[in-house]
Every structure is written in C-alpha cells, then in structure tokens.
Amino acid sequence: MIHFLAMVMMAAVVGLVFGTVGRDTARERVLYGLKVFAEFTGIGLVLAWVLYFLPL
Amino acid sequence: MTVVKSGGSRGESGPVTEERAPSRAWLMGALAWLVPGAGHLWQGAIIRALVLGGAVWAMFLTGLWYMGGHLHLVPKSGAGVLWHLFGACNLGTGLIYLVCWLAEAGFTEYAELPTFEYGKIFIVVAGLLNYLAMLDAFDLAARRKP
Image (cartoon, rainbow over all chains, first blue to last red; front, side):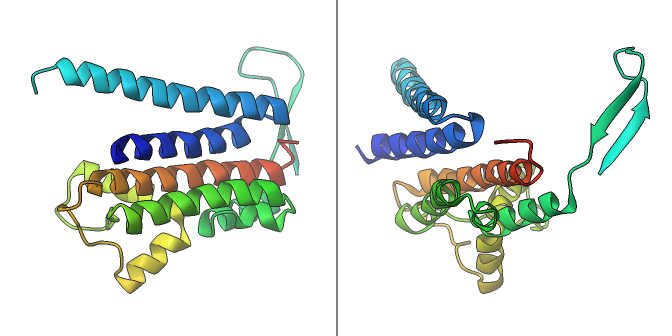
C-alpha cells in the first residue's frame, strides 16, 4: 500500500509543478496538472499489471 | 539588452531581433536553484514560490528522512555513469544538497528499508523539479512569462 501511496504522492507533486510552470492561466494550470497526475498514476498502474504477469 | 542580426536561419530577409536576458534574470535563476522557491519569492510571486519551493522541499525531505533515500556524491571516483547522472539530479536541489555534502549527511544507504528505492527517486525528482522551477524563475525575470 505504501508503494501505491508513494506513487500517488509523486504524481501529485509532479502534476502540481508541471501545471504551475507549464501553463499561463489558472484554469489551464489546474487542467494540465490533473492531466499529468492522471497520466502518471494511470501509466504506473498499467505498468504494474504488465510486470505482474511477467515471470521476473 | 537587444541585439540586431541581419538575416535569419530560415532564409527570411530583413533584420532579426534577438533579445538577451537581463542579468537580473540570471541572478533570479541562480537564486531559485540555490534555495528552492527563493527566486520566485524575490520577484514577489509568492503563491508560485510556495507551490514550487514547497513541492521541492516536500519531495526532498520525504525522500531523505521518511523513505530512507540517499544522496549521490557527484565527484565520487570510480563511480558509474548512472551514479553521476543521479548526482547531477541531486545537485538540482541547490543549497540543500551542498549543506548535506558539507555536513556529510544523507549519503548513507538504508537498503534494509522497503521504501529505500522510492526515497532515492523522490530526491532525484526533487532536484529535477527544482531545475524546472529555476528556468521558470529565469523566464519570469526576463519577462518571457506573464
């Protein structure tokens, strides 16, 4: 569980920073930050499932 | 400062104006690198300073002390490419890294902790985010951003 929380925390902080420096208006910042957060979390979960099925 | 050049790289005719960043922008960039959030704070962008500086500090402190991550010494002899890459990322946290270096704190590996690798990545990401914040402070001072 702590691994998932660490991933979510990192995604949230990166989304916050990317949203702040990457866009100019408040609305664009929020949307871009949420998009980055969702991408980090979503891709992380997909990769976790892919690796789960691989015999490593 | 403005420099006027003749011609352009794409074959346009006429003079091309290239604006150089003022020295204040370089100073703000350096300050933002040295102390996360300070470059924006100095320019009066308090919210941006709190968000960017807070994010870097939070990532660094969480990674180092809560998760048991460690810093990479940049000039370590005989180290691999990856070590130097991580060291360059760690260096992005500026004064925090330099203080840790002088105090010899934060370089111990706690491999027995399950979150050890996460902590290491958190510190690396903190440095990279501060490089981004540094560029943002530079652009803000050079009036390339609103």
